[in-house]
Length: 173
Length: 173
Image 1 (cartoon, each protein chain N blue to C red):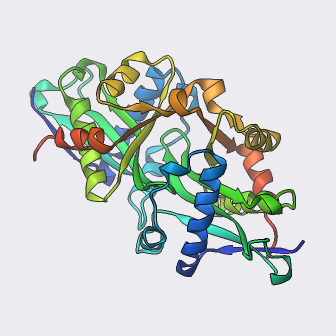
Image 2: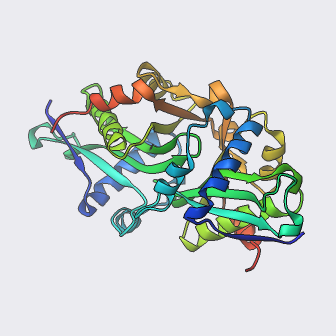
Image 3: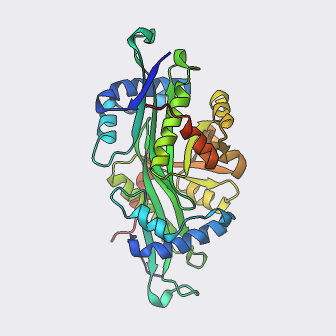
């Protein structure tokens, strides 16, 4: 099956939003999705965008049973390591179930790595759920290192009232 | 003890570089530090900087026994959640050992949260080593959620030849 990868445009945000929800359903966390396509439009297509996104499309004759021709996406942004320098972070990599095993996921991942290399990034990072063995195996087979298992890195988050409380503790100038 | 927090300038990169190494020594990973102050200058003070940084300074009369008046820093950047939107990521938070317990770390963390709130971020995230109980307790006391323990998120990394291999697998246009 032929597929095409290209940079997302503002007009793609409704479709990307649909796939974000599909991915969250797969991750069993769909109740956590609070984002709208308007926010994606605002945050990804402004002066200093918060993210970049690639989308995967198939021909009309190969469309999904629900009628979609946009069947996957990779959303990423640039981060920084104070040990190694420029890094690229893959927030989401998704291919609709009926289009898996056709090289689309590998293609999207490769493109993100290529974009990162162009920006002189020395790392590509991402996070994955412990129970998500298919994804963990996919990445491990490509040489990824699990930093949580190997070095003991844990993810920590502040949000809601706890984030407000931190901000309120900032010294006044 | 009085201290001042301010946005780092290009001229601070040598001092920041010195503290990056001190933090890595504390984390028992100093052999991993490959960055130079020239790279920090290039990547943090360009058109679309890869990071922002705050530094903490004390008065000359309170200087460190090694003679430094710059005694801490917080290096951060903006990321994106496809579930919640804009986020700020705290890559490094460091205060020199002899200046701990004086509110400098809390002040730096608060300022980063404040900067994030100004940019409409709904999350502040970071990562911490499993054995680093003082840091984990510091964050937990302020309401942080450990996403690795609670939801099973693992950090994954590609670098070196594995990253090159991924990029080489990108479909050619």
